[in-house]
Image (cartoon, rainbow, N blue to C red):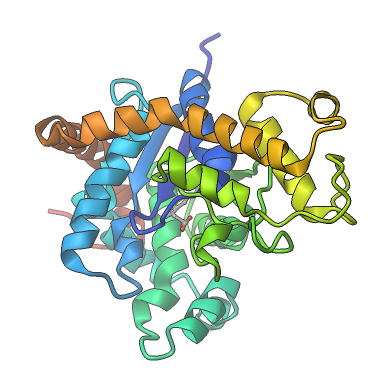
Length: 333
Ligand code: TRP
């Protein structure tokens, strides 16, 4: 019997300043996923413009994100790597799916409510339509699996709802995708406020470690990380949130277990501990950062990857889109 290889799709907005949390939860796993699935990875620049962007920066960040995918081990010969705006079928399917999506559903989306309160001067239609565009991304490729963070779960659920709705209105057209959520325990908190998730929008810039941070910056941020007055490197997320978070980071990057880590730092002070965490993170990021830098200097290569990816994506996407157009009654010539 022929083995059916599942399709996996994921997108990242080029404007997300990615943190070590994104790396551990998502990017780092892409290399391995390619062994088991047909993978498609997109730089979601059409999603990015739902909040105002500086055009030159958006262009540069798009190139940089494609380079980052490759630096994290995505093989463009094996997987499809492309830029969302290079494949017009995304906007086209989004339009059709808009007519299968209710305004009320979109108004209830957590991220929409959050973003419209943070960008109250620019509550544009795109911001509200964001989940439908994401549904189009996913459904165009007959995606089986979508690795996303928990913050995107609601968007994935709506993509599933839209797929089912369309399938029921006509005949089965879309694969109904499943979410692939990161394993518990790998959640990284803000270094300055361990009650919060580490994110780019951290109030205190020392709270988040970015993938682009150099070793000095990484070391400085870990040195300043919030701990407690006990001076014991023990895992207890309730009473020792800061130290426990540092232990989680240390284990995620060193591959050691919590027990091993606790043992290693027994009798040592927080100073030594933080130094070790910083070193481990900085040293594990270094090869990826070097590769990213090397790739960014080779714009011609990156553009060839984008062009090739867009080509392959377009072919798959067109197939789904023409099925949709046929079913909804668009005149075909
Ligand atoms: N909305 C996602 C995020 O900000 C990015 C994204 C766009 C995406 N299209 C997607 C993720 C399709 C998964 C599948 O994280």
